[in-house]
Image (tube, rainbow, N blue to C red; front, side):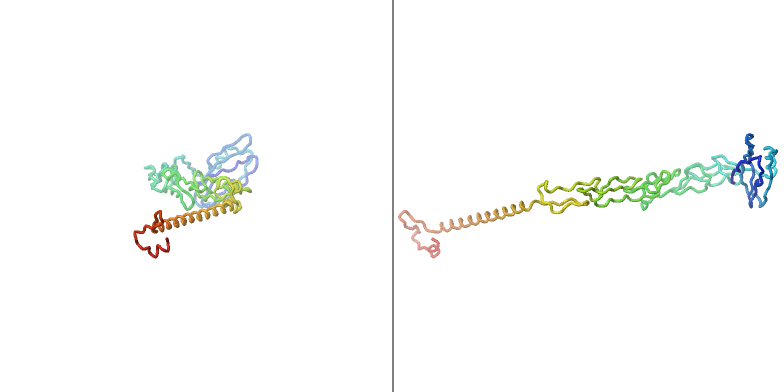
Length: 311
């Protein structure tokens, strides 16, 4: 059944085309009201299917035609009725049936002998309001491939609510749920994160100024290291994406090397001197001793060839 409304008709003017019917359709007026001050007629009507009729009515209304006579004329031309159901009912044929409650669907329509038969929605389906439908709605799938995760699970009376994954933001939403999300962009080296991305907005990046740097992950750009302030030597200047590189002064390095070499030489000299000293001590112990008169105490033994050479 379909409903429409005809614009107000001015009685003081001639109406050439009142209404016409199309195949299997005609207009049937429900009520006729008037405004005496403006001499206008408002007609509310509805469409109802009938047998095929192709008629075109042409009438002329004059100021002498009253509202009551006009309505009687219309009701005599058309017959039938227009049925309007309550908000908690749905129309089946010419009958109004009670709707099934949220979380369920219609199994069997009502008749004059029984009320509507309902069934609960199956898992993975829902119905969030009273309905006359015979199928529940499918629950929304919060697909990770679309950058989504489940915020609120689907029940028989409400659909699932989706939200962006961590590091994503919503680019398409319907009511209170996100339909599609994109990953937050990454800032380039030489840029800093001027505004961190949220579930509803992307990351914002800004360029570093002179004398500062960022690898793209810093919330603020960092100043370049000042090598001279640390008594260091600059070996590579800083850029917008990298810090300056410093090393210890070369003169300092040279001093360290020379000192190390000297220490090694001194150590070797000491070890050599100790070795020579110990060797001489051993030789002296092998040589015969002399008394005060200069005579050798050799226990009357002839000195060996080695003694003659060393002593």
